[in-house]
Image 1 (cartoon, helix red, strand yellow):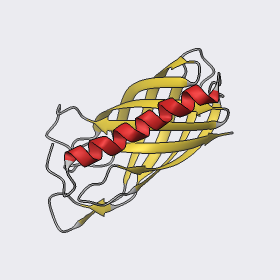
Image 2: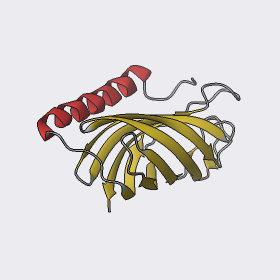
Image 3: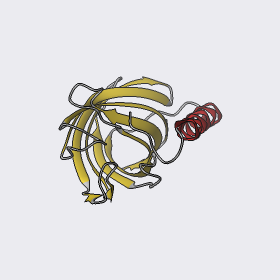
Length: 165
C-alpha cells in the first residue's frame, strides 16, 4: 500500500465508523431482505491523495437464498497517485455472491476493470462487501483490489447506497 496524504489511521477510523453505523441500522431496521431486480447506486470512495471521487453502479440481483449480483460501475476521474496527470475514469464489470442473514450481507466476487495504475493495477480484481438491506435500499462498504497478484495497488474502498426497482 502506498502512503496517502491523509493518514491510514484516519481512513481506517472513518471506514470503521461507517461499518458500525451500518450494523446499528441493521439491528434497528428489523427483518428485511433484498428484493431481486435492478439496483442503481451511487457512492464515494476512500480518498486518494486527499481527494474523494464518485462511484456509480447499476446491478442485477437474482432471486436466490444467497443471491448473485451482476453489475457494471464507474469511478470518476481522480488525481494519479504517481504523476501530476489526472487518471481517467474507470469502468468495471463485476459478479459476486451474497451470503445473507436477515437484512445483513457479506459478498465476494470477481471484477474486470479498465484501469491499470497504482490504484487498480491489472484488469482483474477481487471485490468484497459488507452491507445492510432494508426494503429497496441497500447500504454497503466495499473493497476492490487485486490482492497484490499483479503489481502493487492501493485498491478502491468505497461506501455505496443503492436503490432497487
